[in-house]
Image 1 (cartoon, rainbow, N blue to C red):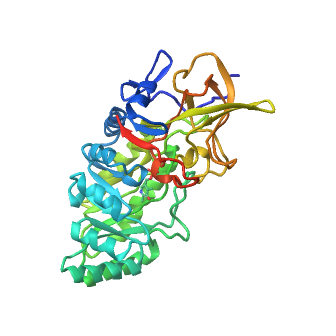
Image 2: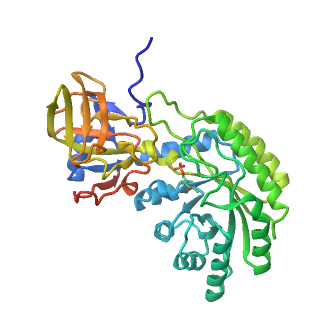
Image 3: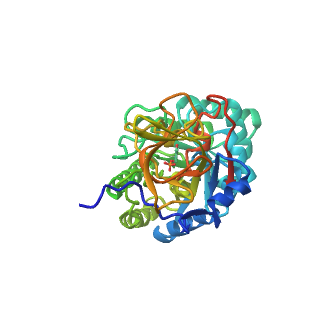
Length: 410
Ligand SMILES: *Cc1c(COP(=O)(O)O)cnc(C)c1O
């Protein structure tokens, strides 16, 4: 029997002389360049490679959008704006970064519950597409459009009557704060028509972090069927069909990369069918973590090394307050270790079993629980991989008043 894998695949960064290389730079040198630990580093080339591979794998004619909430660092968004067909934002703050990137407003859409009137007004003024999440939001969009004298561009976000099975996070099916229940959508479409808003199409997002092709295929096929049914009730032809994304990445021991082959083959069939069912509709896949998560690393320095009743702890200058997800407290049911390595001793000896913890006074502040790592002393660097998404902006920086990490795109 082969030993239990310690890690998700660890092949996205080069390792030279057993040291992790990010952005063509050995991690210790990069730490000097950045000037402080902890920091997040995102590898520009790794992002480019991922988008290229994705385009190669997927059928021609599918549009690719970046869901910015995965990593809204302006430099990352600018880079992705040059590679992608559109950006999906979830707040006026993200909208502002998206507009700065130079992406055309027609290729930016805004989803998310609880959009405030100021955010709706900003979106209407910018000319981007607003994905309606409720009947109340349709009403408020119309009020803002009339106040501004601008016709709002709207799509209907549908809460489908199915869900993406085996997903990391369930975001559709059943009662949800996201989207308008499929059975209520005909009423919304009639409202859009009678108010004279510009109808752009549908947004149907059924789940996230999925590694199973058969689940994605099932959800995508159901998504197209639902869109065809709803399009019959639409006040205008569908220009835009956002079928969601949900492509996952391997985080934990035993997880394998998503096999895009079958997903792509099914998409090819669905696209061909869509060309006759919804002529002229642009079909969009919106992806977040799949584009950026594996291109990012969180780097923290060992401050103290201590033994306690037979266990070794590496106490670091970063932790849960910078990287909530790696601590296991961002929606995980059972805590598992992210891939963690000693920066200058990735694969080699000497090795030891240690727990990597942060400086917070809570047992939740755990980055690696009894992992086999290259031996590290105070002053050495520890790197948490798969950290390019839902890291920096998805963590409670203020908790315990430690300094914030910095972010670099290298
Ligand atoms: C968060 C979100 C995404 C991105 O999800 P990933 O798992 O990062 O790909 C895409 N679409 C919507 C509507 C979202 O809320």
